Length: 241
Image (cartoon, rainbow, N blue to C red; front, side):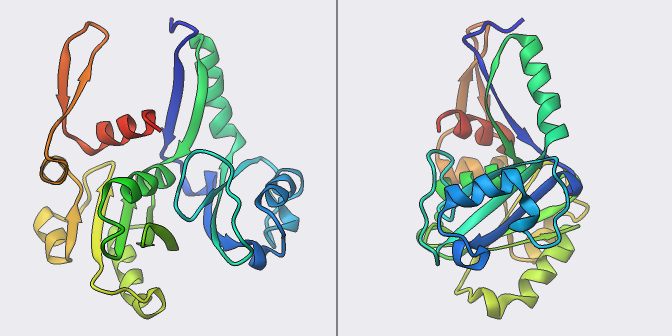
C-alpha cells in the first residue's frame, strides 16, 4: 500500500492506435487560443481534426519548447504539439493508482517525455537536433532547433525513420544536425550499424560522458544506488519538473 502523500507519474509507451501526436498551429486549426482548441477537442474532436471520429481520447496541448508545466499561450503562427491518449489507457493507470492509495501527477506518452527531456538536457540550443524515440511498436522523430520543436513524424522502425529524415531533409532545413537515438528496447540494428548511420545512442556510456556524473538515488531502505541508464535518468528528470 502506498501512503496517500505519494503521487504516481506514468510514462506510457502506447500503441499507435492509442496515441495521437502531431504538430499544428492555431492558424492551421482555425482557432484563436490553445484553451479554446482544447475545450473543443474534448467536446467534439472531429470539428478540429478533419476525419477524426473517436470520442474516447483525452487531449493535451504543449508548446514548441516542450514545457511540461503551465498552460501554453502560443500566437496564431507558433507551433503547438497536440497530444491525445486513449481513455482506456489512462483509466487502467488511474484505477491501479487508486487501489494503491496514491494520486496521479501526470500520464505522459513516451515520445513527449523523451523529447521534453532531450530539449532540456541535450545541447539543442547550440545545434539542430534530430531525436529518434524508439518505443515498442513505433518510432517518433522530433526535429528541434533553438530549443523549439519544429517538425515531427512517426514511423514503424528506426530504418524507416532515418529514411524519412533523409527524404525530408530539405523541408526540415537542417544545418549540421546531430541525430540522437533513445530506445526502450534493444533495436534490431547493431551499435556499429547505428553508429554508421551517424546516430548518437543515448545509453549509459553517452549519459556518463554528457552529464559528467552518475545519477545516484536513495532507495526506500535508505541505500543509495547508482543508475546510469536512460530510463532512470528520464524518470528522475520528470520527477523534478
